[in-house]
Amino acid sequence: MTTRCLVLVRHAKAAQGGAADTARPLTAGGTTDAAGIGAWLSRLPLVPDRVVVSPARRAGETWERAAACLPATPAPITDERIYLNTVDALRSVIHDTPDDVQTLVLVGHNPAIAQLANSLADKHGDAAAMVELARGYPASGVAVFVTSTPWRQVQAGTAALTHFAAPPD
Image (cartoon, rainbow, N blue to C red; front, side, top):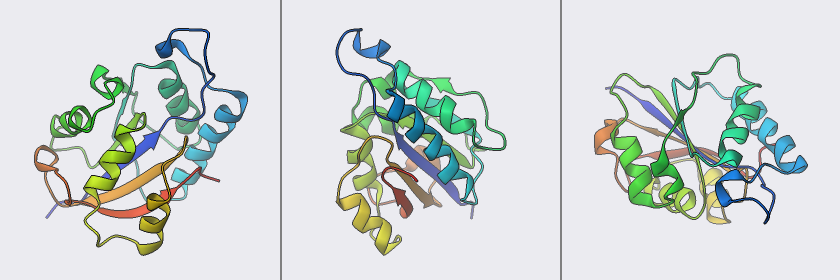
């Protein structure tokens, strides 16, 4: 049985107003928090082999800063479905993931990232992580799940939440 890891990242804090929504950059604090995501992930025993990000600038910048703290990550794939910000769109990205991917990272937006995380949790994960997730999914929040379900079959209740940080330190 193959164990897969799914990492759901909510982008770091972005500037408000001014530019088109997709063009909003990270704030100075968001840039720092995005690096914190990478530092936090570097302490976990996982190596992303596929990263899919929203086309929004803030999502790309979040992963760029996070990835700089990791030993090696693949180039991110930009997917419009993540910007759609629906659970169904995020799930379709997961379902389209090749079978040979062991660790998938999605970098997106709320409310869909939080809704997906809450729906995936099978209630057998880490109790402290589930308590933290229940408190909310702020900017820079990261949830890590494990599942033995093939990517194309991931649905509600098919993954165990192992870690949650909000925001990572």
